[in-house]
Length: 113
Image 1 (cartoon, rainbow, N blue to C red):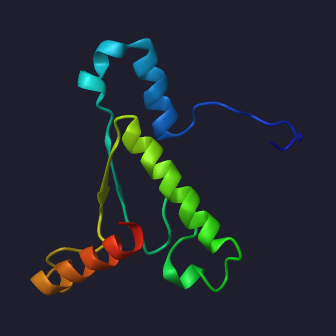
Image 2 (image 1 turned 30 degrees about the horizontal axis):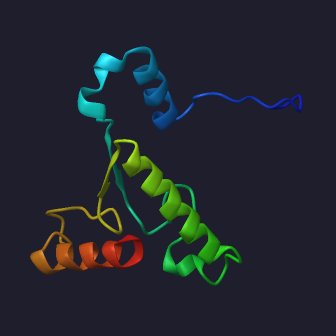
């Protein structure tokens, strides 16, 4: 904060929904949460894990490992994770060919499994 104080709380989607479910457990059918769809070209979950980041990020491998742990924690707690394509693919706009889509999927899977 401007005055040097620190503010903590549920300010993002995951903790907001988790807090809501704590208060309203009947909201979540069989523990389901939400689907989070990622692009991968700029990294994932706030970590700089894209291939181009490797040269500039001294913590590249550690960031990849930490992102994998966060992703697993989300899955373990009922969140579904999905690919929103590697490079924010615009389907039907030239890059939406069958091979283009397959290439995007292979790139995402190769980086993030």
